[in-house]
Image (tube, rainbow, N blue to C red; front, side, top):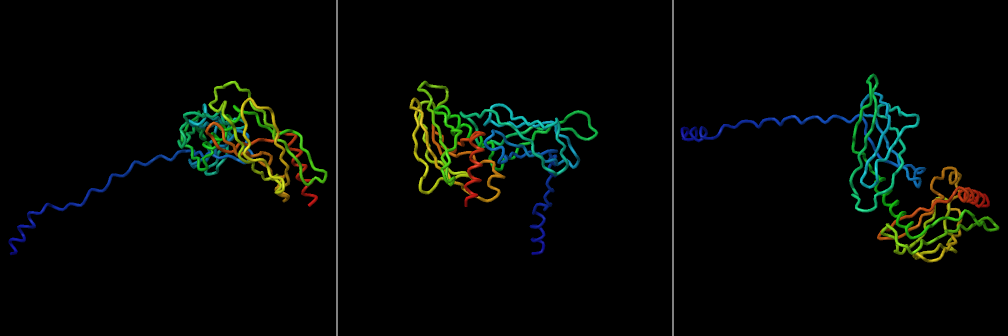
Length: 291
């Protein structure tokens, strides 16, 4: 029996340990990473910011950066004030970027924007370039495109603005702002929304002003090209009276309209001009002082 067992063992294939996996090729760390963001102050000004982080371990000097996305026409350029931006290791710094015109037809949503950063290293002559994929965790590029395209479609139907005059009540507890709507003529334009109705479904308050419960703002307002000019009288009250309401305001004078037009639905922000903005600040301060 021992002889038979030895014969079986001899017939088995030799058992050899598997070869260790080949080490993967190390991926070189990009010297600068880029993240897209937008401050409250930039919101409504067609601007965003690139957050640059130096990952190289030594100080770098940024000469400029640009962002590319299929959602916008052409590159978005960021040029440091004074011509350069010192970037210490692991210390993020922001670079403001103006948004070009949006691409509103046939765009590719969901595709990450790419960046190109020009920089120099200490003791090295000339500029170098790095082209990282730009992180956009808050989808800043995508929703800026959506808002600008919605605004373009709305503008094809009517001009909508806030009248510069504020009508304050005698007791200064409330006031009236007027939303002026001027439909375009009936001639067709290149925009697909031209000739279609625009509907203001509702109007939101802001961090500064709100609608009084007893006098709610209009809803479901339908606007068509060729109609006459109209006004929506919106009575307002202070939305908040804490000391920081005016001092830290960035978007309190942007009136948000929920609109639908040309197959798009979203928020259309109507800014108060310089004159009206100052009057709104004065009104909120006076109304809050009265308690």
